[in-house]
Structures are given as structure tokens and as C-alpha cells.
Image (cartoon, rainbow, N blue to C red; front, side, top):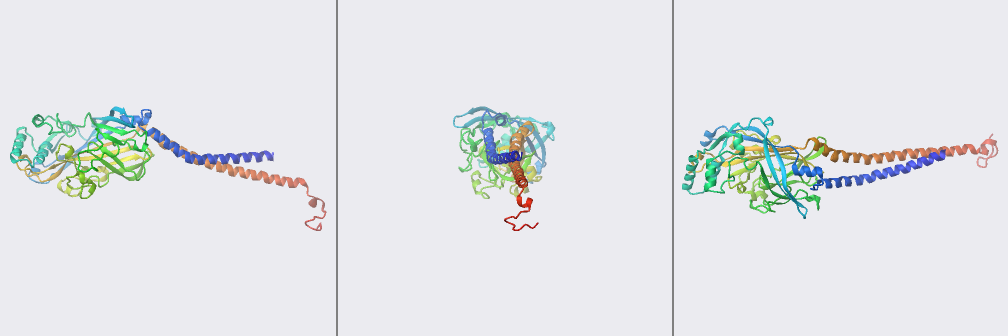
Length: 496
């Protein structure tokens, strides 16, 4: 019986050793299995149902919230006083994104056009598209700056044209018309006699180009040959570099198309992406760790240098001619109109810009942009891209519409494009990429612990069985020295 117990204990020790071995192997193999799954699921391939659907149709609800800077003192501005604005909005639009013309190529890339459509969401907006606001008239004030160096008679003629079409310095119109376009006799006239001068051929609106349009022909890497290249832009509209800017570095098309990034990110990784709307590549930097519904994330934000001028940050010299830091001159890709992009309310910009306009109040929480990324997969969990559109305006002699306007970079609108993963996708994501890896981790430590406990208990049992066997043997022998009282060779005389 004791023999059986001993054999069972040895069996348990062997089982314990094997369990510890299995758990240890799992600590090495587990992460490899997880990484392999991540690679399999992040390659752009129609066979990867979940990730391919996420990439193709972006099932996450995306919203664009638009805020207008309603001008409160248009008459005083014409007399040279500081502009005074009040923010109106948000006017919220649901954004539908869909990739079309998807073509896979033999060299591990895929081409597509991405179409976007916007639908007004009254329940999420504070106001309606029929709300009337006053903003600077881009057609008049933009054209004035563009014609500043033209002969005086040409400027006088332009001013007369504005008067003929009753185009004033400021526009007071419903939000819907300013956003998506309004009929303008001047636009029709310019398109007829000066074709190509304006970016639009139909109605004139700030977002007229956005609705039912595509962002150009993107060709990106699928990650099939090298997962580190997945989502990275190979070319845009057939170009591997731009021609808007003055240096090769500024003309580079870097990073991804701005929706997903390669997996296995570290805190040293950055988020580069190319934005057709900003006509340039941008790069966000790691700020902090965080969590969203139990999923670990890294938050990436815009560095202070993003819109810095060439004086404050030499590599940005190619984006000049520059004004103060915090403004990106996009005139070269906006038909030379004096338009500047910045963070909303001139956040992270030269404080002097705030002195020129009354009614602005920048804060990081409301006006900073960020992307929250799941570092293992490179999938954004929460996105908020915020940008402001500004018009550079000044007095131009010969164009009476400009009055005595002081030189100012005037905020017109700012908008936020935001979206976050939720619902069934979040659940699937959480199960596959948070729960399963955790279960695997607990399993490996569980096996090691179970194995060690089994070894210890089995060893104790084995030791006990061995000891009792020894003791049992001593008792049954009946040593003659202790039973008969004869002389013991070791102890000498009998003491009895």
C-alpha cells in the first residue's frame, strides 16, 4: 500500500514538472501566438472579415461639429477697430465614409477612393441650419488681398464688379447656405470670364467641396509583405510627393491615410498621416497612457511645432511664406486665396493672434486635437481632429469694400471630426484583444503555480511515505539488543 502511495506521489511530481514546463513554454509561445493573430487580423485582406469591414466601411459613427465665429461689430471693423466675435454652434453632421474602386495590386498595395457624405443631426446640434450668422465675405476680402499688387485700375474695376453683384464685406446668411453653398451672381460671372480662378464651379460654400466628394486616389500598403508598412501611403493621386510647398521635406507624403496605423506601437512611436484637406503630412506624438472601457490605449496629440513658423521651427520653413507661429498658410493649395489653418481659438499659437480678435478663449480640453490608439493593433479607439479656418484680411487701396480694415488673421469657423469605437465592434475587439490575451497570461501563470504546488505536495507525500516505511521496518525487525537484554557490541555492558 505504501509502495502504491509512493508511486502515485512520484507520478504527481512528474505531472507537476510537466505542468510547470508547459506553463513556462506558454509564457514564450503565448505572446508569439497573440502577435501572430494580430498580424493575421491587421493585414488588409477581404478574408479578415472584422478588420477588412472596419477599414472598408468604417462602421464607427463619425461626426463633424462645426462652430461659426459670428461677427458682432462689422461696421466698426471697417473703421479699423478690433473684430469682436461670438462662437455659435455646434452644428453637428453625421459623416458617412465609404471606400470604393478598391483594387488590389501584385506589389502588396491596394488603391481606393474614399467618399464622404454628411447628414445634419438636429438632436446633437445647438441650433439649426436656418440660423443666420455673419462672417467675412471670403470672395471679396480674399480677392482684395490676392489683387493687392495688381495695377490700380484693375483694383478699381474689381471693386466696381463687387458693387454690381451687391457683394459686401460681410455675409449674413443661414448656416446651411454658408456650409454647402449659395447662388452667387459674382461666382457665375467669374467662372464664365475667369475660369479656374475659383475652386468651385457651382454654388459657393465653405464645405461645398466636402459633401458627396472623395479625398483623391489613395494607394496604400496592405501589410502582406511587411506588417510594419500596413496602411502606409504609397501614393496619392499617383504622386509620391506633393508640389505645394518649398522644400522636399514639406512635400513628403508620410505615414498612413489617417484612419489606422501599423500594429505593435511603443511610446516612442509617432502617428504620421497625410491629410488631403490640409494639403500636407502631419505627425502626432505620444502624450500619455489611458484606458477606454478596459482597453489600454496611448493618447497622441499635436506637438507645439505642428503649425510653428519657420523662425520658431526651421523644418517648417518650406510651408512659408509664414505669419505668426500657429498658422499654416494653405494658399498654395487653395487657389492662392489667403487662407490659414490653425488650432481652434488659436490654441498653441503666438499669443499676439489672440490680441487682434476679441472673444477667443483657447483651452486644451476643448481645442486640442488627439487620437487614442490601441498600441497592439494600431486601431484608433477615440479620435478628435479639430482645425480652424482663418482668412487674412486687410485694407487694399482701390477696393473700397475693405474700408480701413486693420491687418488681421480672422477666424471664420472651426470644426471637429470625431468618432469612437462602440457597440458590437468594441465587444469583439475587447474579447479578442483584451480578454483572450489576459486569459492566456493567467493560464500560463496558473499552470506554473499549479505545477509548483503539485510538486511540493507530492514531494511532501512521497517523503512522508518513505519515512513511515523506514519507521515501520525498524519496529517489525525486533532488534535483539533491546528485546533480550544481551550485551550490545556498541553500547558495552548491559545496564539492565
